[in-house]
Each structure stands twice: as C-alpha cells, then as structure tokens.
Image 1 (cartoon, rainbow, N blue to C red):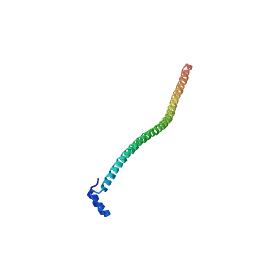
Image 2 (cartoon, rainbow, N blue to C red):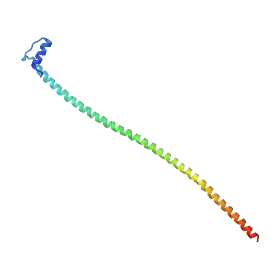
Image 3 (cartoon, one colour):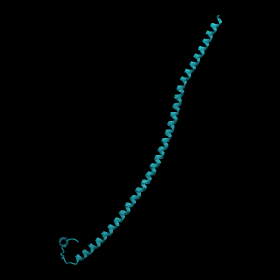
Image 4 (cartoon, one colour):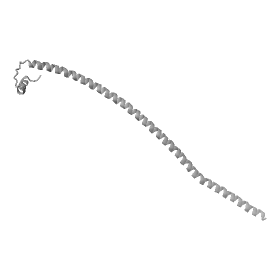
Length: 139
C-alpha cells in the first residue's frame, strides 16, 4: 500500500481536495489494492501456464524440425551415395578400359618381338640348310 501521507499530498496537489488519514477512501484503496494483487497473481499464473505451453510447443517444433532435417539429410545422403556409386562404377569401367588398352599396347611389341625371333630363326634354319647342302653337295 502506498504511503498515506504521500497520497494525501498528491491528491491535494492534483485535485485541490483535502483528505485525512482516516478518510474512508483509504479503505477503498486497500480493497482495490487487494483485488489488484489477486488479479496480478491470477495473471501471473496464467502467463506461467501460457509460457509453459509455449515452451512445450517449441520443444515439439524442435523435435519435428529435427525429424524433418534428419529425413532430408538421409535423402540427401542416399542421393550422394547413389551418385558416388555411379561415379565409382564409371571410373572402374574407365580404369578397366585403360588397362585393356595398356595390355594391347604392350602386347603388340611382344608379338612383333616374337614374330621377329621366329622369322630370324626360320632364316637361320634356311641358311643353315643351304650351307649344309652346299657342303654336302660339293664332295
């Protein structure tokens, strides 16, 4: 309750009415103050309930947002995995093609080498035969 002397001075100053400390208006002020206190307690209780409900709703929204985000991350991860698997498969096929090309490139010199050895061996046998024939025919 506000200070009675201060209220008396303020009423006199603003309204030009003089009231005393035992004036029945102070009973009205006390009754109004009690009513106001009760109303404020009720409002505080309601606000606390509203705030609690709001916080519960925020937690629910956070939980739902987390689920939605997790689903999006899961979908994105699956898409990335599928893309990477496709890239890996394509890279594997490309690597296999390169290995085959390298093998063919290495195979050709080997074939030429062994064909040359075969031709030289055949030429050597032919020349040996001609020389042996020359030696045996001349006697």
